[in-house]
Length: 367
Image (cartoon, rainbow, N blue to C red; front, side, top):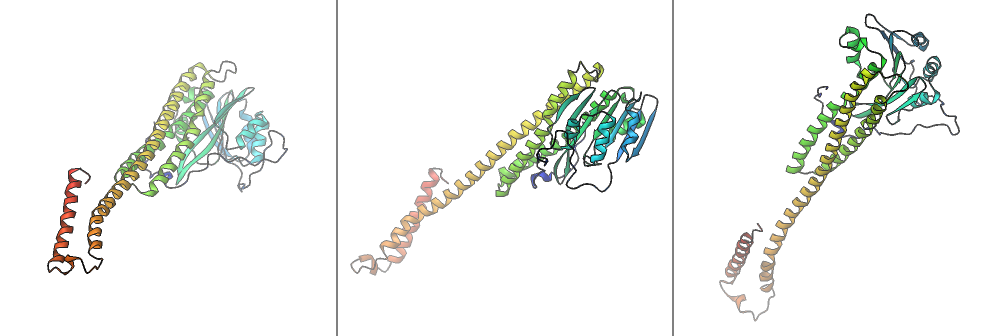
């Protein structure tokens, strides 16, 4: 499990990236049409090629997808990583060289896909999500094409979380160099799954801190924080929950032969982690709902305390107002108006009434 990074969880203060923004398609365009990006990158997509076996390792970078064609029927295992989905020419040539179905290419370019697994003849398309912090929670799509001797990953940016896999391949540690592309695909999915743990750990710490603050001193802006937190949890849930189905289908693979029996037990462990993450998310969602109820209860209790104090003050002043109003009528026939000690007597009466009412409230435990 990846250790949590000490990052201030800003997603409690800012809006997270929208989980779903529909891709704008041209009306009537045929299925599998690749559309140019509204904001295309000036440079071509960078392609990193790692070809390895138990005894050999080769790594290179290129911007020409034609350099990848020779690895389709390679006897060794090849990992091809493309850092952009905006380069339509690169995706089109990739589909041509590796016989990728046009619908699969369309799913790769559409970065708002739900995590899923699609089978196309002799390869799998695996769509999953990578979550990261960039002042807000950002969900990025990672697409994988799993063939008999290769794995192709297509990402939205150059930044990823696959450096531990690259280091293991370079150093030859572990079993990854002696296993097939199915184990490489598992390793990539396992790293993507581990990226959820630091986010959730920070999230749990922030929920506990927010709970203490709400209990001691609830403020109006805290309700917005809680609501934003619930929305972020929904985004995380949408990103991880479908992976259970994806991993389940991979473990049940018996026809294509792309998943070896020795790899399925590792996929089962990855699925267990996915289930654990889903359970943690559900727990935090319940905590967020309870925190919202606690906030509303605290605000209501605080308002009741204020109203109680104001009611007691108003109740005490009712008889005092009666006394002052009675002797403020200016009738000549009132005997107390010309009494020498009348003023002091009225003050003493008001003080006695006030103290009597306070003692009565104290006895009733209203104070």
